[in-house]
Length: 175
Image 1 (cartoon, rainbow, N blue to C red):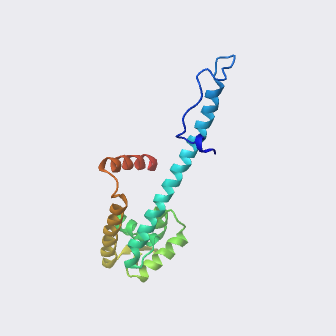
Image 2 (cartoon, rainbow, N blue to C red):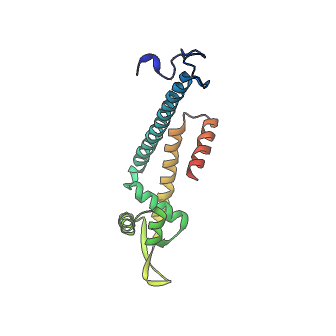
Image 3 (spheres, rainbow, N blue to C red):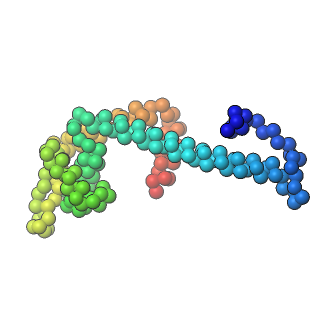
């Protein structure tokens, strides 16, 4: 793209340039096509910016979880158990939107760290419930504080108005 044809380049078309018989301005039509291209590029830039922030947030989360030797997926599972209480593996898999086999692997890792335990389900002897341990509850609380601090660092450059706008937009996209 030539240096003088970017989004900040001056508009050098005159209102009467390339007037067609039907009264439409061919220059305006061309400008519309260029603007559509810029809008698509803007959307692409928006998507790229969104993913860049998401990567930064994921990286910050991994760093925040390092003291507990817990993976992001294990942290999510522990958080679900803290918020919703004991549940069967199949319910945990549904909450996490993962395959039951994957939930089993996540819970195995949490159990090795003494963050959860498996107990028989009193309603069905064949089933087990996954329950956070006291150590799991305190770890989840510490992780929550660490992630909140990491989020504060990430969003520290935003004004309160920017934060409110971002929150509103993210809620709208989430719904």
